[in-house]
Amino acid sequence: MIEFSTPAIVPADPDANVADLLVERARSTPDRAIFGVPDGDGWRDVTAREFERQVIALAKGFVSAGIQPGDKIGFIAKTTYQWTLVDFALFYAGAVMVPVYETSSPSQLQWILSDSGAVGLITETAAHHETFQSVQDELPLVRSVWRMDEGIIERLTSEGTGVADEEIERRRRLAKGSDIATLIYTSGSTGRPKGCVLTHSNFVELSRNSAEALAEVVHQPGASTVLFITTAHVFARFMSILYIHAGVKTGHEPNTKNLVKTLGSFKPTLLLAVPRVFEKVYNSAEQKTETEGKGKIFRAAAHTAVEHSRRLQDGEKIGLGLKLRFRLFDKLVYSKLRALMGGRVTYAVSGSAPLGPRLGHFFHSLGIKILEGYGLTETTAPASVNLPDLIKVGTVGPALPGVSIRVADDGEVQVKGINVFREYWNNAEATAEAFDGEWFRTGDLGSLDEAGYLTITGRKKEIIVTAGGKNVAPAALEDPIRANPIVGQVVVVGDKKPFISALVTLDPEMLPAWLATHGESPDLTLEQAAKNPTVRAEIQRAIDEANKHVSRAESVRKFAVLGTEWTEATGHLTPKLSIKRAEITRDFAREIEELYSEPVSTTNISVPG
Image (tube, rainbow, N blue to C red; front, side, top):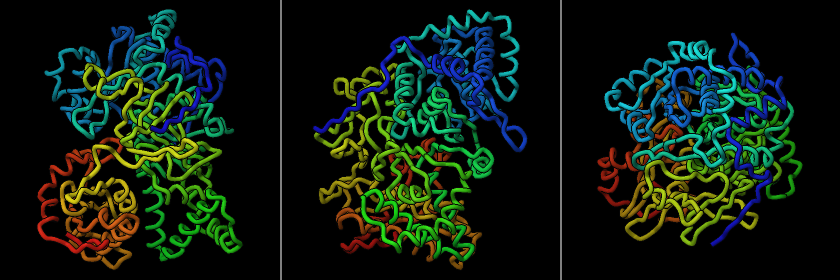
């Protein structure tokens, strides 16, 4: 068993709670802008002092509305400034937020609110309220429902003026480090969501230590970011708290279709994203150049970028020819991509799924260091992250300060430390199964190198065992296939089957432009495109390329292109865009069986199903 630990940098404070982080920020830099809120075509600064004033005023409103310390309050809304305002107002009022994904179904909402024992719910839109109304009769404990679309923040702020400052200060101080800070339900990629009890110490100690480990990132002059990942997810929730602690100015963009425009006006220095976002940026740029007849230039630039970054990482000599090509493409391609992201981004934090070395090296050559990290809801998001002064592309970095990581004899990654959750809410059996002593069993497979840098290779439960006894990690095939611009999602199958196959969906955003540049009608529906020979040949090419990196027994031999999407709405993706493998294999069982209706040759070249 291999184990690495990183000692905590900041001494633990068992009495500290999350609200203390804002108190400290407002006292140390009261006039620093820690938020930018949309104001016409620009942004209006909100200082630390002003934000805390708004937090206290809203907390008074919650108190006047009858919220008691320890009450659990559901919250379903998009990623906006108001989300974090409500978050901290509930902390100051002594309440416990239970975030709900805005895309959650009525049954999911009902389960989360009933299991948590929530007594109140805050919704943002009429649609969210309608979702609640459809299950309201099954939620007798929910006595208060507030609607942001009906001006509840303003009304609560007004109604709370009679509550004394001293009462808010008393409530704010009630929680200690070991107390519950929030109850976050897992996204449910396998079975019913479980409520993770995350404590104040989980957030406080992890924020304080992460800020020191990533000082170069969060304390760079003018540090700023645009948050667009849902704050209901632990990844963005933790980072939003870290940003307040570190004084990083934060803007919000709830609609990713407006992201390029928002980045251009806000000009952040730091981005937080999941790998699919970086894939979209790359694929969109590639497709745009194809449309302009400059696809060959872009592909050459991408190849040069990856080679340049790899040589730098490996300490190899960079020849004059590579240097000259790199300078040329920096002017022609890389600079334009930097401008697309606002022109000031120097760092990006990526999590929730493997990024892949190709994208890591590509963005590194753009002057953007992607710090790929690893964690789960149960680890308050990050357990490890690449460090600014030593990035190993393809890994998820070493353990953060205060965290220990080990790889068990069966290859499972296990974690203990300041970030590990306390328990699953109302589920002692699941809690017991999740721990080996102090060590949390992540369910992920990985390896640690000699420097303690972690590489994730797959999920224990997702390992496919073919009829021939070969163990196959799906991610090793799915990630490179998904990198193709017209691929939406891919799921590798083959458990107890004679060979590996794949189900592939198409990306509806990228497809029309790709079709147009390849001599096909851009108006093809997904169903029509799935049967199109040119499209199928491109999927064939992507799969054959992925097959080059695995053994014959692991290679994809057959594939089916589906004429449908997998989305949150269809029940096939989680809110962080991870695939729900069990649901997909169940709903597309017929298509899978068809792939095995006829034998195939034993080469590494796949054939369409």
